[in-house]
Length: 411
Ligand SMILES: Cc1cc2nc3c(=O)[nH]c(=O)nc-3n(C[C@H](O)[C@H](O)[C@H](O)COP(=O)(O)OP(=O)(O)OC[C@H]3O[C@@H](n4cnc5c(N)ncnc54)[C@H](O)[C@@H]3O)c2cc1C
Image (cartoon, rainbow, N blue to C red; front, side, top):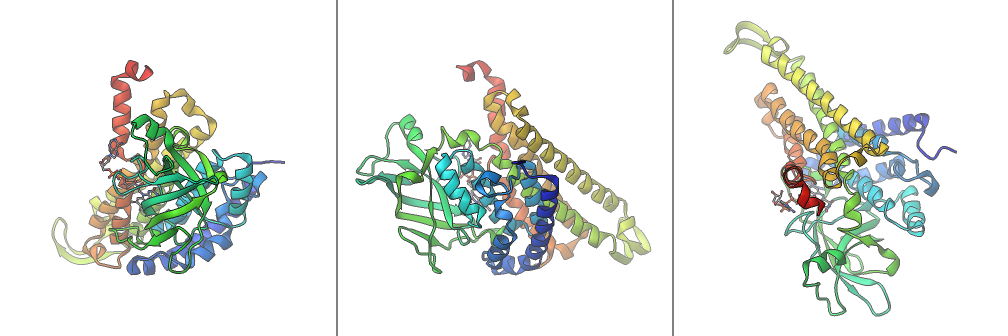
């Protein structure tokens, strides 16, 4: 029995992704304007069965590897990047948890995902995003397990999710965080649990507060999640966070890269659709002529060629990185460089998608700047690529530090 997705199985999955992408494309503009989560996407995503793509076949999933999942995420993102970024968090959390959970946990939680349940992962707190140690407390309970208290401000997909994964720092019985930094790092832990909230976002010790109001990526529904005595039994503990889970997070950046690759594809598609047809009529400017088709103007020809080249290079960088990570090539890099080097695919694509969304507007002209134009939305949505980990600045810091002080790091 083949435990990885076969080519024929992938083709069927990809056809479903194309259909779902089309649906996201149709509903996306409404939820961008309304600035809410795209609620009809929940049923459509569950019905597609695509949530089970990365789940190993032994747990009832499809056994999709990194490249297969990346291709599906990009295809969905080409339809609507904001809606897809939400479901991308599901893929990221399934990928992270399945590598770290015990066999019993895998059977239970991944089995549920294979049956259609959705996972999300609010880790970042207001103070310092993803790299900030968790202020959220996990207070040990007398009968076993923990109660979680705290607030996560980046809860993408919370309005659709059935399962929550998060990080919190285990305290003493009185709720005091470890004072020593190293102890605090080791006490930060990774948990999984039920996410049952009613239509007002209220659950037992857990709730959603609708705070999401950002420049772009409106339909991600990245709300605040409040933990106020949320109970996690002992079997909801997965592992230590920084010293356990953090070491296997590198590939997650490739899922973000896949979102922005799909967005690059869409920018190119939309720019070609407008620029191949647009006619200026009689003009007096850089070109002086009685009738000008923009498809014949030098900087526009060059601009579209540049966008296509950036997309193609990004695609190759991403696919090759997925293959290298799956094949273990990254073992050749010093351990400290694995995170930023794998992340280069994401930072490269982030820089290219932001360049393309801006350039497309300048090529299409002022009509692209008006509300409701796809280009102004792509411009706003592409800006989110700066923030998901690793960002370009921190990647360069990681790399520079290793290259400038290799002996110290060896110690
Ligand atoms: C659309 C969207 C959806 C998101 N969804 C989720 C989600 O579902 N779950 C989730 O957990 N998070 C989510 N995030 C949050 C995201 O992953 C980041 O944690 C968040 O953007 C804040 O982190 P930051 O580094 O940008 O900001 P800050 O942490 O406030 O950083 C401020 C500055 O300090 C620098 N900095 C931060 N930490 C370090 C460090 N250790 N070393 C050196 N420099 C540092 C940064 O580079 C930046 O320049 C989402 C973000 C967006 C935009």
